[in-house]
Image (cartoon, rainbow, N blue to C red; front, top):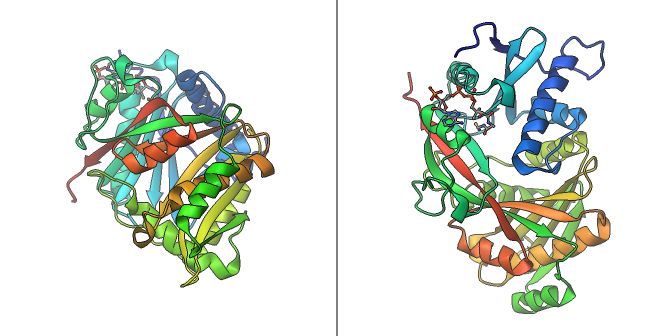
Length: 365
Ligand SMILES: CC(C)(COP(=O)(O)OP(=O)(O)OC[C@H]1O[C@@H](n2cnc3c(N)ncnc32)[C@H](O)[C@@H]1OP(=O)(O)O)[C@@H](O)C(=O)NCCC(=O)NCCS
């Protein structure tokens, strides 16, 4: 059955969330749809975002623009497609996500939203479409398990996977989604001291919360740039991102606008003065029990000195001191990323689900 009364149209990103702003109510309703979906998926509010955070996350920046498309029946928003368009690099690509309210599924709305998103991506000159599906299930529960082209891991053949395949996407890679319960974690000074001893005196830890110190920002930009391609990427059609001091500052400004705390631990290589690696934890103040592990990188020429373990234990200890309300940490790792997964396992992270990284290549016109 097709819902013919439903119209697919762009959704404006409002200037403010004031009721007087004509775009505010629809934006808030669309954000609620996304929050409801994450609650449905994970059975908890760990991914709940406030409308303020969602708005700050959607505003255009020099490196990324977002397009929102809504499926609307009268005043009711029944579905949403979001499109992320990189602007500073990877301008051949677009990230797409589609969510339809449970009571409106299997009526073709997802397909109509996706078609509109693909059209908007094409209008922006994008030929590579990327999407992610999440599956909170252990491998033994993966009914009709689907393996990615990378060959490692599986996801279940559920609605999200069937939808992505029906839209013409290929499963390139699987990521393991893991959770560390900090209440039970026993990461402490000893693990940090062991890793520091193994790393030796050529390396020293440096920390910042919020802005990176001016004297380190160029070196930090090198790490962020390398991070964009150094983790395993299977067959995903992505190029190295361009990072410089201005992009670091822009990223920090955005985190502030989203009311997020960012804790970075880095190691400095004393003989050269350059940073050799970093790790980053993020906590949204509106949801202080939940931390997200972002980047962890050690530059190739500095690998094999236990710096990954040193960085991670140092940042976990800092998290406990600086943001003591944080009770758990979520992280995503490529299923084939044995080194990172081994460190995470030692720290006590447990697998709680898998994500599928999908890709569709459109012929350039
Ligand atoms: C995935 C989702 C967007 C599909 O929306 P929808 O409006 O139900 O999708 P459609 O009705 O347009 O279905 C299109 C095709 O997807 C596949 N599909 C969708 N739901 C399916 C299901 N539950 N089981 C099997 N196949 C399914 C089918 O091939 C379907 O074509 P068909 O109806 O002709 O068989 C919706 O289930 C949803 O919002 N899920 C949660 C969010 C999510 O996982 N999004 C995917 C990330 S992009």
